[in-house]
Image 1: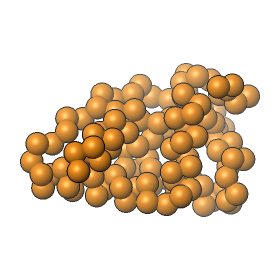
Image 2 (image 1 turned 45 degrees about the vertical axis):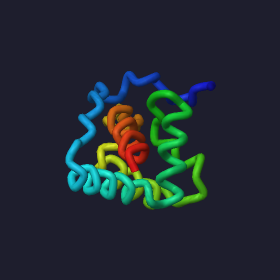
Image 3 (image 1 turned 90 degrees about the vertical axis):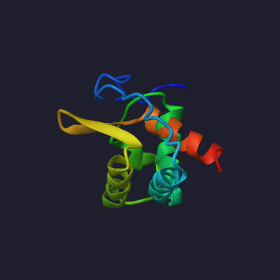
Image 4 (image 1 turned 120 degrees about the vertical axis):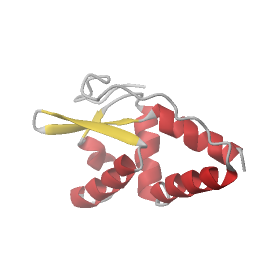
Length: 115
């Protein structure tokens, strides 16, 4: 997949964290799954995650160009995804780079598979 012109292939994002352990306690698993599901419970946030996965690395703030939303709305969605641990970001000069957090995405997949 071609990279965006501002993409630095992960140079701008902090290192990925390993996948957290899948909880064996059902109540804990339910809580974690509900928290992560809430974070992706909007089509724009799903689109952002898909875009970040598709680009295999960092996309600099031009995520806005891919979505039919205002920059402030995209920023709110990015904040919710970052707060949930699904993405990570770092300031790179005047830009902010965002990357998918593969460990948390893997945890989300494992929790869904455990349903």
